[in-house]
Amino acid sequence: MLNIALPKGRLGDKVYKILASIGYDCAAMEEDNRKLLFENEARGVRYFLVKPSDVHVYVEQGAADVGVVGKDILLEYEPDIYELMDLGFGKCRLAVAAKNDYYEDTDRPLRVATKFVNVTKKYYASKNREIEVVRLNGSIELAPILGLTDVIVDIVETGTTLKENDLSVYEDIVPVSARLIANKASYKFKRDAVDDLIGRLKEKL
Ligand code: PRP
Image (cartoon, rainbow, N blue to C red):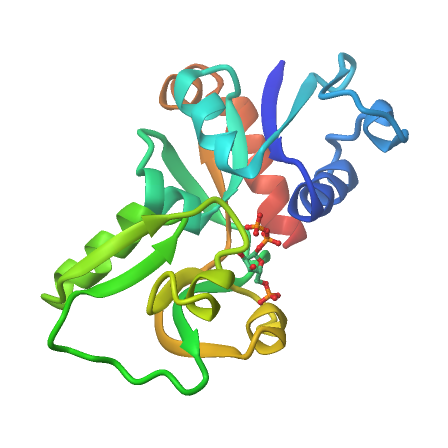
């Protein structure tokens, strides 16, 4: 059995469709239900649906052999896994954003709201810029609007969320896309199954 952790939501749906089309289909995944674990014994595949920011935990711990996760999550948590392939979709970027009329006061530490605390600290350390981080879990865009922070570091995909909240990108940090990752032991002991998956994915993509 190849155990695959998929992120719940749009990205996971897209990945499943691709995997199903290259031989890793699982009928129960296509039903409208609230199940989290799906198996197709004949195909030798088992899927887990997990929160996007948990995929790497299942893979690192070996509960899943492989998984699909955004590069943003890998940069933030730096899990001890193999990053096998850039899937080339789920494209977005990590960026600094601020109010449209923002003007940076470089005489004091920059106040930054984000879910990506480690990425943020590294980014500003590389610029020798002193910061104060406010860790938030969502709706980050509110922070500069309410004066909680000067800027945010967050994912920008279409830019709609920023635009609709009168914010704009101040600096780009790094481009992001979906990555196939593998547990290190699984990659050794299930090498044929993992290589077969990579081969079919490459052909398809
Ligand atoms: C992400 C991110 C932004 C939004 C950007 O939020 O935090 O709010 O998407 O996308 P856009 O540029 O296409 O508008 P997500 O929907 O993943 O929810 P979250 O707030 O829980 O992170």
